[in-house]
Length: 525
Image 1 (cartoon, helix red, strand yellow):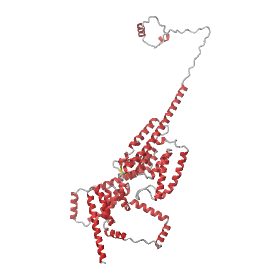
Image 2: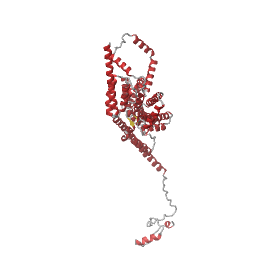
Image 3: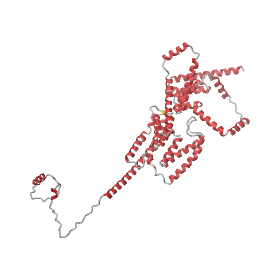
Image 4: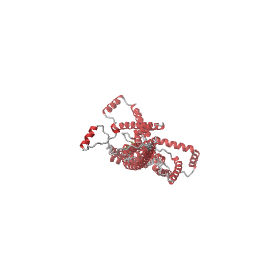
């Protein structure tokens, strides 16, 4: 028994020293604040966590190193149990599942407990990890770093509500810890603390933490105002608030920006501005290719202007996405990613989508592809003038021409820096398709306006011809022996001039000396 205790003691101290060495080396590397050194510290921390899985120091260093390397998804996957929205969604799903099938669950639990074949194999390695985790765990530490680190990661991932809750919770726990420690301090320690705090500058991390929390609150206030205006029917006001978010000076996270573009597309659609709504859907899909709501909205907009082939293309893409979700039995993306649709709604949506796809295919087969509503696409009324059309077309070209399609990327903070090129390519491709559709609509509407002007010109000319008085020749009646007076054909007929002296002077210079017969009526003027 003594040998066993000696081996156990030797095993414990050996691994403890090894874990301390890993943590010390990782701390030294992270202190340099170089990306390569921080990346080199990650394998050391993984080795320490493989020995002691729940060591708080190793977990904190790993989370902070991942945050420094901007691997926000890995931080969220590591600490996903602390994300508030994920807890709420899991609780809702468990509540709905328990309400739907409580009797079947009870039967399953009863059968599992009573069945003799439910024996689980005993694992010594698992027991060793649990024992080590229990020994190394500090009971007096509440883990405030989890809320601060995870809050910053959620902010960069676009989970703004979760980020605000986590950061505020971390701030509250830090204040409570400071108050708890300050109870046992004497006046001298307070004086020393005040002198040291006045002599030293405030830490930059706390300043960044405060600025980040203020920025999150500002974005959430603006989005709340925009959604409230949209619900109230004030579409221009909603568009203005969303434009403040997407066109702000400080870049917004990728997920949050895609959500704001989606809401602004809904506002544009309600305001009757089809081209702007399609452009915002394109930006949303460039940032989030698997956004179900953006695909549905763009397909509906294209169907509104009777552009059936493009609408059918989006519906086919959406159908493929639904089939992928049903095959994988989960929504696309990680567990903490937000979606506007629930998994249990996918089968019903797929049935509706199949029916709509068949109807569109029937319309295309009947030849209804050429009757596109270009007036609604450009945003002008039927019977508009050429100047109104040119103004609307110029505004659309200046906003959505392919050269400026990727300008919104400059105001986007990407989760992964490698996603910039793919987002830029998707944005240019979708913007080019929209630009071609706008140019085609402009040509068609211009031809219609020119034809209407030509018809109006012909109609006005015909009306003028009809309004002209008809000159009728009156015949001269000769009565009795009266003979018609002969008309002097040698009479001089020319331009009338009041100055007869000037006329005579000109005739004298020309050598014209014989008399000129003149009409009597000309002299009376």
